Length: 145
Length: 145
Length: 145
Length: 145
Image 1 (cartoon, each protein chain N blue to C red):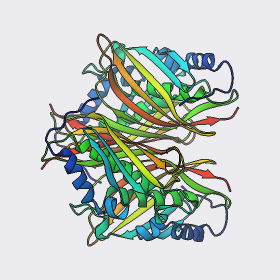
Image 2 (tube, rainbow over the protein chains, first blue to last red):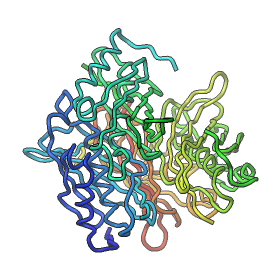
Image 3 (cartoon, each protein chain N blue to C red):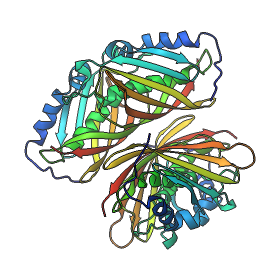
Image 4 (cartoon, chains in turn orange, blue, purple, yellow):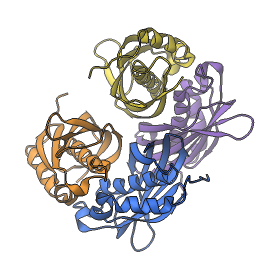
């Protein structure tokens, strides 16, 4: 699906918004590696204090990355005086997250005037092929200035 | 509903398991304040680096607390050589999380041999009454030793 | 939680709306047995053509009843020129639905200006105690006249 | 993703299982139009008694079709002495379902030994292009003979 952003500067706004979220940018250490209309990719390195005792990433860390990718994908499509809040999400865990970094890809499935439906997928990457570890579907709401 | 734990020491096992999760115990700073059969309460202080720019807690932090409360509630009911993994969860955000600390209460709704269904609710607390900010329903799976 | 309806006649409106839904009232044969502010109960008899080959009710029949109970619970709280549409729901199946009839109880958890979060539970009833077979959480939206 | 069925006759088994579900085959009038490993398509005509007063299909009818497509997609991959039960699903409604018929496409995202994660999408079709009206993600469980 092709989406039409409503103002110039929507790419830089996502990068800035991510930097302004200390939980995502500082605590988790994530940053956006792709921002386009309706699609955002966010990556982060895996650190020891984000892992479970068995060695895989804590599932809620991957959830945080997925929520950000999906929410900012929706935020590329709202008006300049709006931003996005998460209404609800549902997450399925597909495989243990083992590797050097996580990559989350968020896409808008349906962009409405008020509500958007997005999907996000998280991959654990290292040497070799990435592994699909999480699938999220979420409802996002545009809220006014 | 009354649940019957399958071994002595299930309370201490939950406290120890939480301490062994660095993301929950160290990064988020959470600890269990109540552990009983099928019911666990986890609390954490709110720090500046867990807040969004508008001042409320990042929703995925509250999700992490809810997942832990629900998962350990299920873990009070498994056999001594089993532990719990999260299969899936769904989260609705009910209100902005503003206050001094979060409290998550997780309860088992249905305890099956393999799968359990749990609920968790998160409250933002400070002065005055707590506010209900998040509701989760989750499927948990007991995995063998 | 106490809710305040916005117009007289909200009880009769729910009964009428249910009668105007042929899939719920005629195909499934359901009707409301309790309508109050933020809470609706709907019941239906179980017929052979709604059962699976193993004898339990098809899960999507119970889902339909839960969605109606939750949606009409939300509809008791909107303005007279609004009605409710289902944005999304999530359903956990807790037990096989065996018995003579289903009863769904829907309640509003949070009533917002645009979005409401509701829960619904479905019970299979016959001789003896009812059995809790389904739990739903759903987001409902009020849409204008 | 490529999947490997575990026995010959998995295609005919799905067709037969659908015919043996009176709610799906008789009440809703649906049948499978494609069955392959990990992927099932089910279609049904839209009748007046399945519509809401505004003319679109009742959302729970589309849910029933999606659940069947996803569940039978999973059932193409289990052993001959197993069948699939729905553990949970989550559904987002994307657009009103108006047209002559519904088509649901279900796919397995991850096939585990016990649990499978599937997606299903429902389209309302008539003259012109189909419209994507529903997206489901679901957890299915293989249960023994």
